[in-house]
Amino acid sequence: MALTTPFLEGQEALENLVSRYVDVDTLPWKPTPTPGIDMKILLQDKETGLLTALFRWAPGTELPLHEHVEVEQTYVLSGSIVDDEGEVSAGNYVWRPKGNQHIARSPGGALVLSFFLRPNMFLTGKIAGTTLE
Image (spheres, one colour):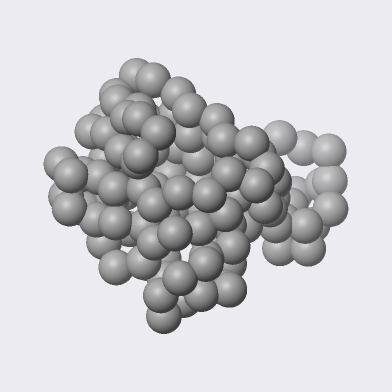
């Protein structure tokens, strides 16, 4: 695996088995393909698609229909995420099995910590077939 934290200063000088301490406040917010959702990548393996990231959802944002190619896990730090199956609010957690398809919305905005083994596959809209990277 080629694990990295993008924008983590000095990581290239660290030995393979040394812990990486990440000052999350210093990492930049990066736009995603979905307007209104930005992310801070905490851990990434571009070869496998493994991703741990903070996602900041603006109020009223909708993530188009997508499929979870592998299990996805999300812990909500603030706000809430809603779909046709239910709502996950601040302090709560949801995980979705491989193959789950849904449209996610955040009526009031949210800050979430999500874990992916592989990127989502988008099924509709102008970003159909793309992955979240």
